[in-house]
Length: 326
Length: 223
Image (tube, rainbow over the protein chains, first blue to last red):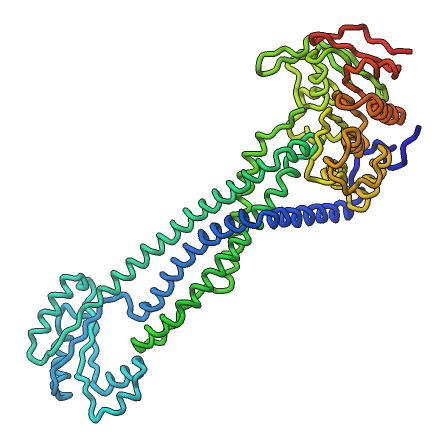
């Protein structure tokens, strides 16, 4: 009795040239890549749920980040420093206004100060408010003279500013002192804290994604226990056994990342009109900004990497415990 | 090719499966491993396939001492050994082709060569044309032959089988045993554990009889 040529040789199987080895390597990975995709497609409900959870977990910190970034953008023009506006009574002549301005500038508590005439004020208001056309209808300029000032170095504590404002209010030529820009500082402090929270939330939710993918992979490993045992039995290395699960985690993470980007896109589209209405009501030229293309790619890539990592951790842990019985 | 040197094996549950077992198989030799169930036949095969390591003593297969092999080297070691199981251990949700091709997929054999070799292996066990069938659509004898095709497709120098005819009627058992003999005829070292007395008489090959974890007969080669 004889065997065909293919079975007669006891030389170990494998590619013979380096080029052949590389193409085999790619072919093998491509097969596993597509194979793991097919397996996911055969369990549409479980796969969809996992991807949905990953997508939401990734979208949450991104959404929070966008809230902070946009709030920053809105308030950026307001500046960090405290500024007082001293409105003089109407009518005040240019002569009187300059005298008051000099008196204010001479005070120790005052740092730089500038006198704004009604005409300058009107020009600035026109430029910023966007209701220039309506202002043209006015017969005369309704704006008062204004002295804008900043407290001197080291005199800008809330109490000192309040005391300065109270003093200025006592001047006979002064109608109104607006001092409260401290809220901008508070807002910025809150936004800074929120930014820390974004980082923290992103870290926690990333761990969540790892856990989700890890659990999915654990279930998948349990479901394919027989296959894993047989594969190890006929000489499959840990890397070979692990590979399909790594790809599975990769796909789920990638899809989760894409879903997160889609959720953010939909959210921005829904909020765009209301935000524009609010901005218009305040006469502000502000549009909601999303992520840069690079950042969207980072979200997608981050999802894929988390999926891969979660799968790797789960596979390393659970596959070690499956040893073939015979 | 296979050498057991005063091998002692105790399982974690305390059961002593083998004690002071020594024997040697030359390259290209065929042997029956006999004895009652529980005598230690399966343990011998498990030690050869490195599913277990000896508690004491040495198991040397193909020049490698299994006791001192790193875990990372076990997969490559196992690829040198074809194993056939009584319950064939096929993947029921995969067609015959995938089952037989699994060792080639592990070895990274390109698709074209894989097709050729799977066909050759199936032809050898008389199952050509069954590539797309699922294992459960086949008879017990056919399933066992799929298992054999999988065991030999990487052309291993050693082929071991644990009660491969245990679930088969005499005609099918004979057929399967003939297959082993054909592989042996082209130089594969074959060890078959069986307690099928009728079968033993029809194949005049060396027998190693184990009783209570020891060799019960002086090794001899039948005429």
